[in-house]
Each structure stands twice: as C-alpha cells, then as structure tokens.
Length: 322
Image (cartoon, rainbow, N blue to C red):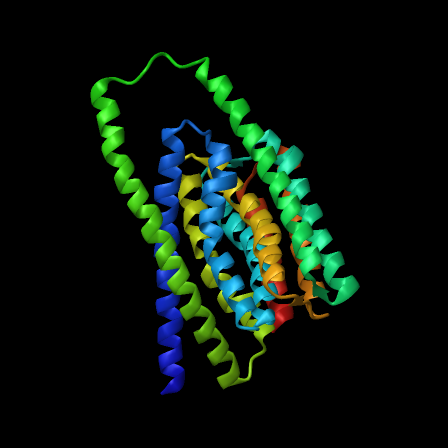
C-alpha cells in the first residue's frame, strides 16, 4: 500500500513539475518576446532556465534534505538525457534537419563541455563539491549571464535598426492586456514547480528505500527523466514548428544552467558529496556533449541519422546502469 501511495505521489509531483514548467516557459518567454529579445537568447536563457526549473527545485530540495545522491545524479542524468534522448528524439522526429546557430557551435557548446569537465574534476579531486567550489560555479554562472546580456543587447540593437515602425494603439492595448496573463502564468508556474519538487523528492526517496535501489540510480533515471520532460516537450515542439534556435538553445542552456546554478546553489547550501560512481556518469555527459558538438560542427545541423545515433548512445548507457 505504501508503494502505491508513493508512486501516486511521484506521478503527481511530475505532473506539477511539467505543468509548472509549461506555464513558466509560456509566461516568461512571452514577456521576453514583448521586449524583442531574439529567439536564440530566449532559448538559452528564459526557456532553458524555465525547463530546468524542475531540476533546480528537485536538486536544491534534495540537498536541503540531505539526499546528495539525488542532487548529483539528477544533474548528471538530466544532462545526459537532454543531449542523447531529447536532442536525439528532436532530430529523429523532425522531417527536416535541425539547424544549429553558428554562435551555439562556436561558443555555447564548447563552454558546456568545459564546465562539465570542471565539475568532474571538482568531484574527482575532493569527493564533494564544497561551498567554495559552489561559489566558484556561481561566479562562472554570473559571467555566463553577462555574456548572454551582451548577446541580447547586440541583437536588440541590430533589430531596432530594422523596425518599420511603432505598433498601433490597438496592438499596444492588446499587448498590455496580455502582459497580465503572462505574469500570472509565470507566477503560477513557479508555484507548481516548488510544490512539485518537494513531492517528487520525498516520493522518489521513499521508493528507493522500499525496493532497495540506490539514490544514484533513482536520480540518474526516474528523477532525471521526470524533470527532463519539459525540455523534451519544448524542444520537439519548437523544432517541429521551425524554431530550431529555441530547440537547441534550450538543451545547451539547460545543461549549462544545471551545472553552474543547480550544483552551485546546492553546494552553497550544504557541501554536496560526489560519489566515485558519478565519475563515469559525468564522463558520459561530457562525451555526449562532444558528440553533439562534432555532429553540429560537421553539418551545422542535426539530421535523423545523427539523432538515431544519439538515442543508441543512451541505450548503451542505460544498459550499463542496469
């Protein structure tokens, strides 16, 4: 009976996380669009942080409750899932190739790989992510935000020179009315994410104890998959609608956010134990990033064959976990 209850709570928590992220993305990306922020920047920032909010909420909540295995496992598992499964499915299910922006290939992807290797080195050297290292990750995160702000300003300056004119009074009124709805969606989404994260961590931990699974396995698979569903829905939907910059930017931005903000914040709250078993997982995460970069660099896009290879890569990793 206890198992049935915990599975129900886990499912309910995931549903709150998914709907909360959906509301948050719709609201925050809509607000960003009102200010003319370009699609790629929206994908790397608002959408990436919005769809990563479940990972952040679950991992930080787990750190507060002393479940470090779920904290690190969720980040490693989510980053692997984001690249191998989500981008793999996005490329495989899209009729045409998924183009990748030049700046993403040149700057964001290499940066994503480097910070995953930095986190791997931190964990390998000290067997934990200390508060000082958490602060260091936050410093890098702030530098990354500064880079994104410069990119946004540059794009905004360029687009302002191409504007044909100001919107009419009717259009302005329509935007003013819709802004309240967008704000409501954003606030409601955050509330659902916070509540859902607490329910998810408690239920996942209880299930792990009942059936004797390690927190590492739960974090790398069940929790990682559940908190990565927003990225999956967002990326596939964006790619099929022709918004490839959001699809790719969402995943790359989410992985960067997971390492710098999620692990950094968790470590600032309490030093996060980095078990030796996680070394293999972060090597896989970094290798997945390199594979994505090679595929993107070679053709400036992802095609169905490359998407299939990414999915096969995850299948091999899952067999290893079993």
